Image 1 (cartoon, rainbow, N blue to C red):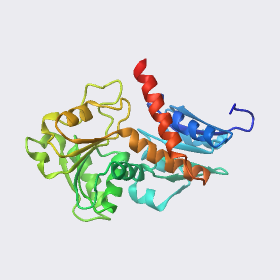
Image 2 (cartoon, rainbow, N blue to C red; image 1 turned 180 degrees about the vertical axis):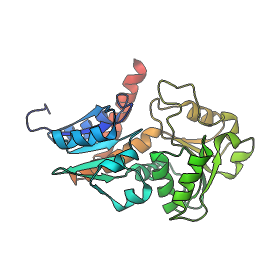
Image 3 (cartoon, rainbow, N blue to C red; image 1 turned 90 degrees about the horizontal axis):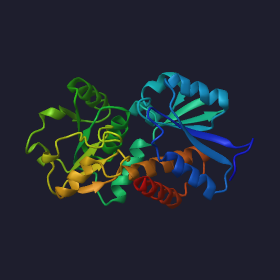
Image 4 (tube, one colour; image 1 turned 60 degrees about the vertical axis):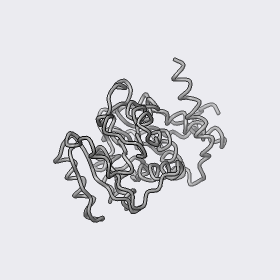
Amino acid sequence: MKPDAHTILYCLFGRPARHSLSPAMHNAAFEHLGMNAVYLAFEPEKPLDAVRAMRALGIRGASITIPFKTDILDHIDEIDPLAEKIGSVNTLINDDGIIKGFNTDGHGAVRALLANGVSISGRKTLVVGNGGSARAIAFSLLEEKAEVTISGRNEKNAGALASDLSRYFKDVKSCRIDSLTNGSLDEYQILINTTPVGMFPDIGSSPIDPSLLRPGMTVFDIVYAPARTRLLGSAESAGCRIVFGTEMLLYQGARQFELWTSGQAPVETMRDALIRNMKNRQKR
């Protein structure tokens, strides 16, 4: 549909944001359902700028990505109880000027793992990172009865996240990434990278030493640009099961769509749009 004076605006706020596949995914969903709506990407300097823009321009809903997922909490009017426990939001709804925050990251990660045949309950899981995505994913994994260890470059930050999560769940551990040595990952069935390490243009980097990976693990990288990160390529070569970041992008986006529209998301249409646009990027 062609935008007009009545087109409803949705968007993504982050830095960076221009690389995102979310516009392709959400715009395909709007078109499929015949909705007069459009989804765009913006890179404001500060989270406060994003919230002010939503009110001033009547932006109906927004996705929030790095680095605003936690800082934006100080600027919104209401927060969903689950998002409040998690401590970060990735979804905003503008309800007549009242900005409400939600979090669909954890939902997306769990759906991505289950859709790829990965059991979660009782599995020892290493979550690499301690930002907003790590919080949401770790929280949701713990709700699914996984055993979670938070790992980061900064021991203090990783420990702080583990401590926060321990308010709701028992035995959440933490460790420094550089403390991992050969054999350190033997106890883990799942490894999830929640950091931007390996994201375009820094595609040669990996959040952990690839030599630490062992056959039989599930390695999930939430980075989706590129789809096959160095971490996932190394994991596949090591005999691991891999889960692409596009899977989480799809399922968290579908949940966002449902929160914004109160309707059912056309998941397969959204998946097709992601795959098509990824292939187009690879040709460039």
